[in-house]
Image 1 (cartoon, rainbow, N blue to C red):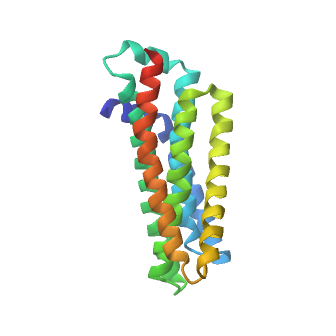
Image 2: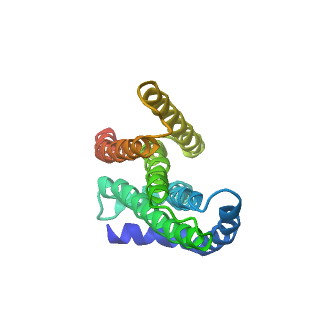
Length: 208
């Protein structure tokens, strides 16, 4: 498993530093125009998306076929993508939080509630799409899997709007936004765990 994670890291590391530096400087400017906490969401989503790149690279280089000859199971290969996606999401969350806090303190606008709300939102818009895009990457070919990834983010937006509208019928959404976003984050984690359990089992069964 460690070797699989290192292989994926080597694939994305070449452009990772440039990507991080770009978002640090661009995001710092955006923090003054919009909100310093938006960087939390941007960094988490951007880094987690890099995991999807490794699946496409495996297919284009036919590494997925070569891996069948190695002493690793198909289940381990699939699980490594879920682990890498999760690690990149956490890294993005940590980096985004650190930069957001620095920008907020510089602007004298640090707020714990905003930190928690945007952290929960970042978890939602990164983890929930991952629970859809990772299976699509394995089930579909290269072109269709990219479409599946785009649809995953569209579905996430739809779910967020639907949940917000449902809660808005029974309570003041603006006053309870923190609770609603927190519930969405929990739902996202549950969906991700279910996807992690179902995807490897289904694909391994299909390959038999």
